Image 1 (cartoon, rainbow, N blue to C red):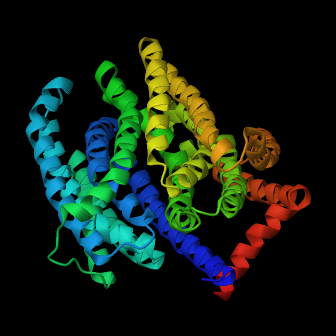
Image 2 (image 1 turned 180 degrees about the vertical axis):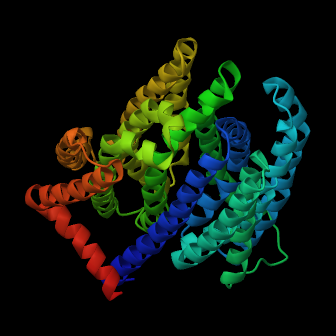
Length: 481
């Protein structure tokens, strides 16, 4: 593939992947706002506890082996089929484990029907196990347009069902069926949308090389998922479902934007980086450009969201959700550091260094657990601050290997990211100063968004012309492709 075609493929892939994430998250966000008004904070807290266990269990069947297929230069039908059947069987064992554990979890949290809800939503695990290989096939072949249609279809149908059940008074079941239906429909659409079908083939000889790479990524992902959900487990046990609901809601809104950018970068650049794994110079250039562009996108969103956060919460979630504000502020600052973490991790993964990924996770999550233990007795806000401290540690840990592997130092990476932070901060000051204008809240919010966008674009155009032109070039190439 020549550079022009490769560039068009990357742009097209990013366009469809980002469109898929924005569309799905946009619909989900609107639905969450509607459900936030229809359901109680306790309902959200109950489902938040359930999702902790589902998310951790889901990592077992959605991470590791899919990455191994994408990282392999030329995976065969035998590779895909072997992983397909292995993952189906494995996912049912994971579901069985959750099914048997559900009563003990209900007894631990002393919340009525928690075990029933957990067993029901855990059906998402074998559904995810079934679709993993198809997702890896789509990612490896850069068929992200298919992702768009499968995800958006599942999101829209499940959203309608979730709202209907909430209006009908089903409480937490409305959220449970929304998540479950989303996964099922997306999986079905994906199955029929691609040409690949599994052969009746399974080989341990094929599995073992993929397993050798995949288990380290899997274990690293398990550590990450456990840590990310550990705070929720602790809050749910030592505090109240309402505290957990406020904590989760504060992280949810910034998380929508961060996840969209991260998933887009991860999904599209990982297969491209894997093809360049033997050319360190080109790989470094790709990582540097990725960091600059993703930072120039994510920092203004995070700082802009922080600046309008109170008005946004009052308008879309109502006053009862104001206690989530401090967590939203912390989440915005953490979110700004995500591009520098994700791009470094993708580079390391693409070079086949899953061993480094695992070692790094032990270091990062060990520090995170230490911060959590120190904070747990001092309140939910202290727990959130501990998470922010862990993000700082994680940023430096993720950069460290590429100092040697790619000759991409701390100073170079900070230099690539810092302009976006500075320009976004200037924009944030302008937007925050508008809070003193005494006008209708909705009009004020719209004005803040408009002014923020204009100010930031002008600042980037004046002070970061090269990156600005790069982004415009990507957009133009998308239109021409």
